[in-house]
Amino acid sequence: MSRRKNKDNRAWSGNGQGARIVTLDIETAPILAYVWGLFKQFVGLDQIVRDWSILSVTWKWLGDPKTHYMDTWKDGKAVDIHDDSELLQKLWQVLDEADIVVTQNGIQFDIKKINARFIQAGMPPPSPFRQVDTKVEAVKIARFTSNRLAWLAKVLNGSQKDKHADFPGFELWAECLKRNPKAWAAMKKYNPIDVVETEGVYLKLRPYIVGHPNVGAFLEITEPTCPKCGSVDVQHRGSARTQTGLYKRMRCSSCLGWSRTRYTLNTMAERRALLSN
Image (cartoon, rainbow, N blue to C red; front, side, top):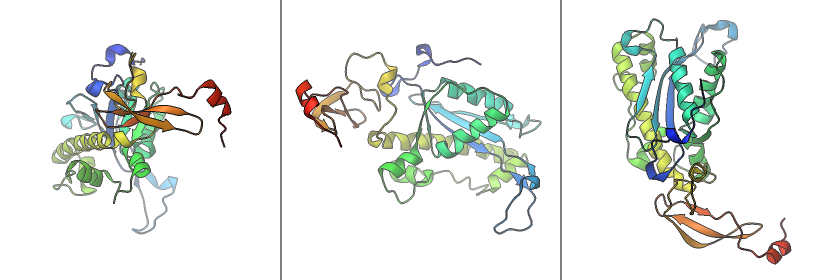
């Protein structure tokens, strides 16, 4: 394994961003355990028959129309669908190449689950990346009726989340574990839709995100650049005041997000006189 983050790999630069931004989503197999009933069960570690594993992953690079999918079914050629070793290798490569990873609930679920499998497999960590979690950001900046992906995709982009009607609810995972080819075909359709919808939600939330990873830092720039999307089409719109200074306020004409310059407009005497509390 090698670190792959370099300028040559920044092939997809939609909206002018130099950062490698990937949206991804994983689907996992459930834990299989012995239980004594159906309601409010406590499952001890000695009741676990088989631990969880990763069944499938979808990823999409921002600016690239292609969506990539991989699973442990391999069109029926898998000897053990719980063997996610090849999938982990690919996931490691994707994360190693990424500068920014976009997920829906990935901070609490996807990335931690992936890290758990990496550690169990004895793999080193991929090179560092920043995370943007659309669920976390939605909670921070707005109060939607629901922060679930199905709802956010619907109200922000008019999308209808795939409900895999032929295998509703948990049945899809149950049938995949039974090696049902039709269920795996449904998974191959369902997982990529989640990624496309997550990317759409991310693009709608991006102008509002405070503290978005600065994509301008990944560009060789000599002019003001939007820190959210990387566009150079930014305009001076008034002033921004902080506790310690006065700055030029900028608005991006591409993503419509706001930012400010890094250097204060205050004179040295004004800066020295300004107190903070």
